[in-house]
Image (cartoon, rainbow, N blue to C red; front, side, top):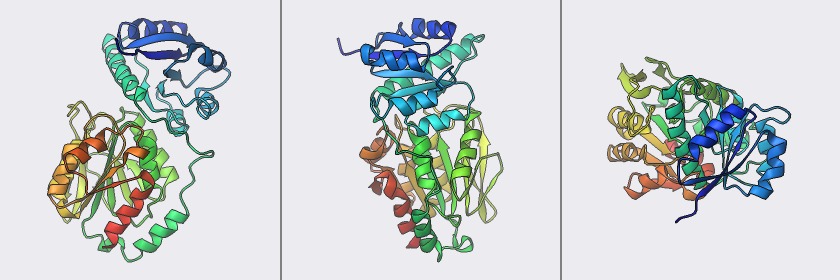
Length: 351
């Protein structure tokens, strides 16, 4: 039999911990090697239990999940899935190197519990194959040297000359930090940007606020009917499908429908298909880190309609899934390390 994934659960709630252990142990792909009641308990037990992967509550007594990650990951780069209520600290924990997160279920709702378990198990399986990224110390300042570079390159590319260009970005696992890495290098003069990141409702508003705070572009969670303009990035709201549509001489977004496409809502393919249709050769498509194949077919449609397309390379992906599928089917014009993607975009714009 193949190697089981050794899982350790870190949570201060005994009721929730036992419920999680009971349910995940029904899946034969996992072996639950133990649990910890808080961060200090976890630090003692990890060298003994030797887990492959952890689930981690963010709010814990004594040492927070965030501080625990900062202490653990530099010496033990284990994949960590955060299990959290609606909490802005999730994004700090992802920045500190956690692979992904899942929202805690409503324990009074059987449907909520079932959907949570399905999502958590899939995220654990993905994380077990992921590349854990150990960030350099310090928070994310808005990039200065790269910003100056883009300002110089954009000086001939004023908003009125943007000529209908739109940049579309899609990502999943590892994408919250990858999208930030790209956007923080862009100047406020960039063409309009539309983004789909797999993320549940509630969290997308907080994530858009974080991006807006750390980037020089305006970033916000999209609302149905929002017009796109240069210097603005619109993020698909969790639980809705976002499409780009023509509005007069410009573009707007439709955020309608909660049906899943390819298992996702929002779906990168839905966004990319709409951009392929409306923007055609004036579009730039960027597919970043993520498990599965969402966005690959949409990126191919963009390329076939004349768009310039970029896929993140394997070496810098947390999970080389979506960009790999796009590369396989010929959807990618240029494959690029994450840190070089902004330059590839600016080179294209300056042509």
